[in-house]
Length: 238
View 1: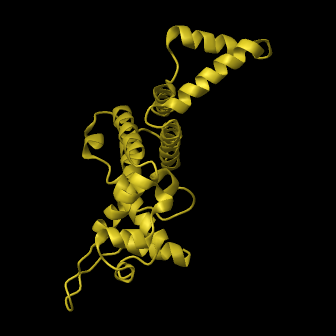
View 2: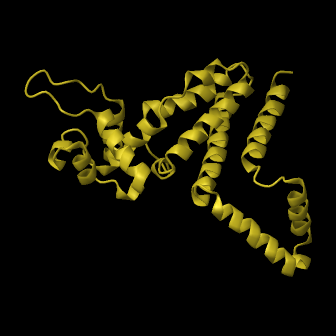
View 3: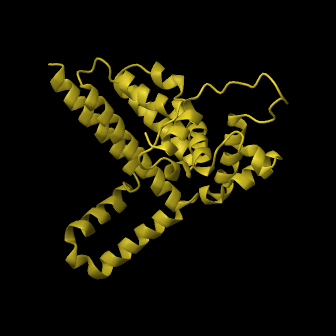
């Protein structure tokens, strides 16, 4: 584990002992993380800085460094707090499919509530205990399904990928979904003038417009992923 990853791991997974001597601490890691989350939610992740978080908490930047070594560690802590632990209701659903469906919907809600988390959770990194509880829930739901451990992990990756893709589209579209509507209008206009070059696409767009079947990527993708897992599990349990 690299030095920077080791520092993140220590921050996320350490025991966080309270000092027994000296002045009583005025901050804790959760309070620091929530101050950073408030800034990221309102202004974006790029605007989060140790200085701004310290100012929001009413302390000096040097005081903040007593708890968090730098911005990278701060962002890792913020992401873990923002994602939060996997809700117990997911684990209480009956059957693996119901559990995974509820799991995906809950995770999507977290990403849509805190869109900056998409940027904070990319690439090789150390996950925190709250984030890891979501992976635990997927593997637990698939326990006894006949899938191997590797397949259970791959199922989680597949579901997370779909959730992230839809959350990214929602972020790009904005609160009113204007970007997506603009894209649909642009495609329709292009097909009017260039449809002979793309006959299959023209037919599909016209059919979708008549049936009102546009913008179903979230539900369609989720159900097809679960259908695929169901088919695989059915073969394994024969």
